[in-house]
Length: 174
Image 1 (spheres, rainbow, N blue to C red):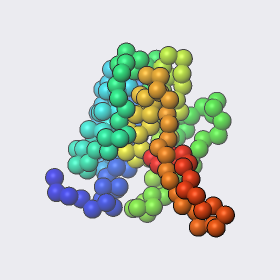
Image 2 (tube, rainbow, N blue to C red; image 1 turned 180 degrees about the vertical axis):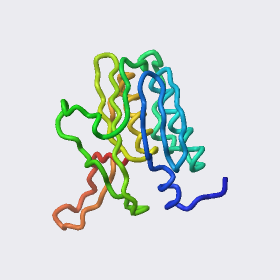
Image 3 (cartoon, rainbow, N blue to C red; image 1 turned 45 degrees about the vertical axis):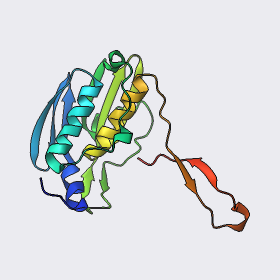
Image 4 (tube, rainbow, N blue to C red; image 1 turned 45 degrees about the horizontal axis):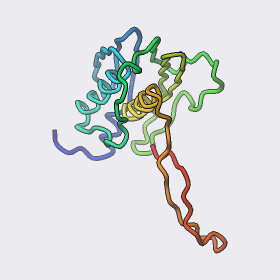
């Protein structure tokens, strides 16, 4: 596949439709309907990442992929994904509106919802693009194995004279 410009990659990653339940589902992106089947959470994450490869020729940076230490912990009790309206409100307000504007493509992107229940834990995920969905899934994979999510540290230099020391502060940079 030829190298695509960033705007085209972002456009192809937009999820138009998501319908997942009972270990299978459909993802529509870039006008293509792609079926997914999965046995566990890692299968689902890798299936979505392979859809990204197919549509854009790109995968996530390896730093986003967790080390798999306990594949047995990645089984699920319940996975359902689809429209933003699937969320039952039991965990508080939704963190995203039903639609957002992509700052790269200036395209209005529909927000999708993915509920994962496994081993007594619940993860509620909202996203609009394939790369966001994969990142959410890899965080769930990491946490389901017992590894807490730790944001990458970021160093910033303040221009205020009273803050003339480098400060290490956590930042979730995607």
